[in-house]
Length: 295
Image (cartoon, rainbow, N blue to C red; front, side, top):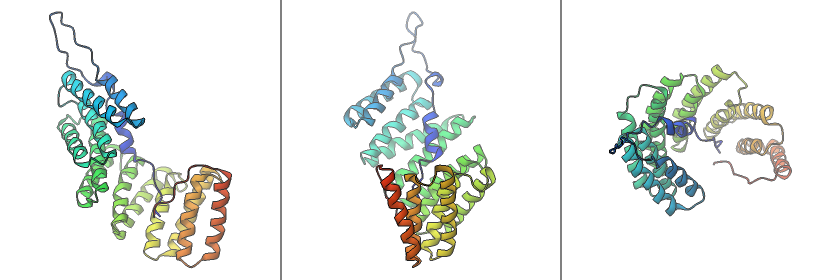
């Protein structure tokens, strides 16, 4: 029943890791001292497009081509190569080829860790790689392997952006979700409380970013049978969402449905029914592809 949060900021920042202008290509000189054409960025873009279109065999071929030409033009240990490795690993992960994806994610992480680590982008790349590898382990129920990677990612993000930043909160949510799935509720509760406190300090008590974390902490309280605490948090989260999105948005309906489920567990069926009627009205008003809340 936890609120499904968009991709963490760390994973999103991965897309900014290397610009074509900054790859530091190493020219291969001929007799006229001219560097060969650098083709890997175009190959990588074509691979990404093929992957989005579901043309996985074509995407794999293009990713491998991009990786090869990138290694030739920038060196095998360049940040650009790490980017190519990560994109190919993502394709393998999508195809559930987890062993192949793990090998590439580890190689990309090793490249990034050997880098100069002298600026925010380089540090962010390391945190992103840790986060991606941890996420891959979670897909395989390897929580013991994922947990320390998430912790390392959080430590780097805290250092880069500050402990009260939105980025730090986003990084911590993945570890909190791991604890929820493992039913380690005290650990998850402590982490979500820290995330909420940080977010309040950064954005204030009605910051829109608060709503998902309030929802998630309410879910934990509900699992522990603390229904009154869960109810209060859900009401606060819904009030924030209503202010931000309006009273009839499909996204809000997910939170209303979560609240209704908590009220059902608390044997407050009349209140739950009123929320369920509202959920149905929102769905009817805004016909969109519906995503059920995570149980």
